[in-house]
Image (tube, rainbow, N blue to C red; front, side, top):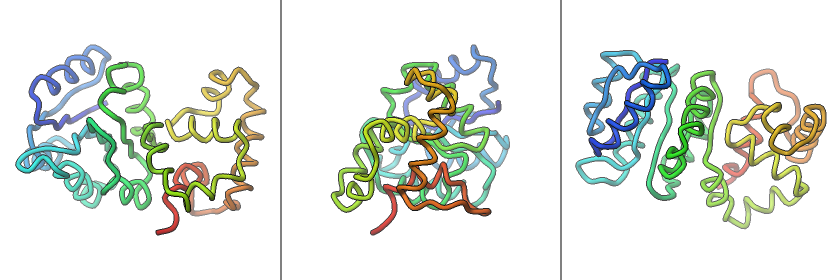
Amino acid sequence: MRIVIADDSGLLRQGLAGLLTEAGHEVVGTAPDADRLLEQVSATSPDVAIVDIRMPPTFTHEGARAALALRQAHPDLGILLLSQSLESRYVADLAREHPRRFGYLLKDRVVDVAVLLDALRTIASGGTVLDPEVVTHLLGSQQLADQLTRLSVREREVLDLMAQGVSNAGVAERLVVEVKTVEAHISRIFTKLDLPPSADEHRRVRAVLTWLRGG
């Protein structure tokens, strides 16, 4: 996998580059700010860009805005946003409008190399990865939370794992149940969230993004 890393911290860039290289991936570029990120992606055509949400010069949402620009210019590019704290601005737009090949994790989560590598594989293959703490944060709205009251505790557990990009087999392994049981849970989730079969939309992604409906 060819990867570009964008973060204002040189130490983090070097650390991630080293970990990814050791895991067999190719880091084709690094960038300390959003402008360099856009240049690196155009010059190297990576499979995935790892982007810090807060970068120079204002350290507000430069990375997230750059991610939106990248998605428009490079629709097949995988994008993994990282942040030190919970953010919802721009993330909701990206997840709702461009859910495929998109992920958002807190930096504390990528300390676990396995989590980072799993997220990158999921994103590169067209999936969506959302940090469970982010999902919980965005579910704080009463209106949106009410939409999920139809789900049982186990169905919420399955949906939470789906939000992390875990496959059906992975969900079965973590919950110590059969894959067929997971498939039955997911079928009921689709039904309870009013997600009928659709030829042009990915119901798994739509279920994960139900908390973004409304507003």
